Image (tube, rainbow, N blue to C red; front, side, top):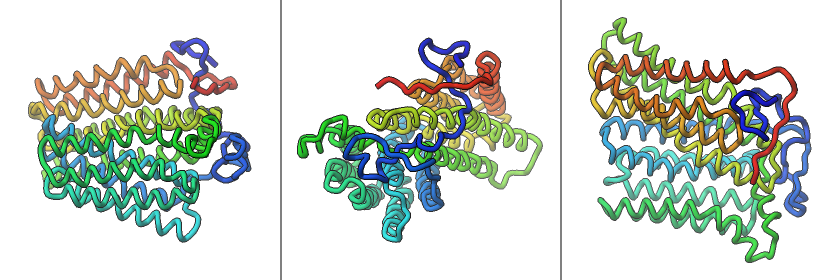
Length: 428
């Protein structure tokens, strides 16, 4: 059912049912799918395992460490470095999420390797606060271990084709390791080199095996897109909910040992309401709708869709949570005071960044409308002025108000409808 504000020619999805049996691509499970380029179904999609969730908990510790790094120095330079570290790390998290979708950790050897990958991410997380200082080499070596474990596991799915992912990823890890030997612009340049190497990896993944094996591009794209939509969408949703949990922990850290006054409880509940409103923004409509879109998308177009939606669009959403958590930490102890520029911008900017990522996410998947959320992005960013001019509690209240009005307007003028809905895959 088309809704008011939807773009013509597309169908909105709010709360679709779980994908029916046979609606999931099982190319990773049946070699026939790789040979023919078509999905082979054997039932409903599998669920995320507890070991994968355990892996996500370890990864989110890196996000917590980035929040700590930012809260210790609320400057534009630190914010940029936090973003740079997270972009590099999140690339390999996405690689593991994609990996376990095709190579589930259902055997002892795979579980052990995945645990080794967890240990490598833990090394990275512990070194994050000093990644641009004396801990840079340790961070780089931990990141190199993350890449090597991933490459070893990936041979179970793509065999020798893993070279097209492993080599650029390993070179990126070596660039990060080398950055630990320098400081200033040389270190920043090596980090940017790592970022460039990661961004060209999809090109090698798509075209490298074709040059060597003479396979058609459509067959290669189908192999890359042989994803289980239910598992893939749920995996990233769980990552997001764990990240929200870390933002709630920031409330307790921000309060610390201060007296439990009425003002402090008001600020804590406002911070919780802010996290709850951000949760509502994604989980009430976007997650189930995204799964339906992925299920309706042919495998040869699903890989690019996964990259655009769950890497490029998810980056600002997760970074926004980290920035918002840092802002909460710095403001809860000074609720009735005028905020300094850094905490006010970090808090409001984090919310705006999350919304911008969600707008990109919805646009990629054609989940209309996006107008209300797009308008809320600059409005949320502008609430920093309220914190600077009045107080932190006023800024928090305004941010909650912006999100509530946005969600309310969307529900009021974009009703779900009760009739059957058809899901149309985004154009290639």
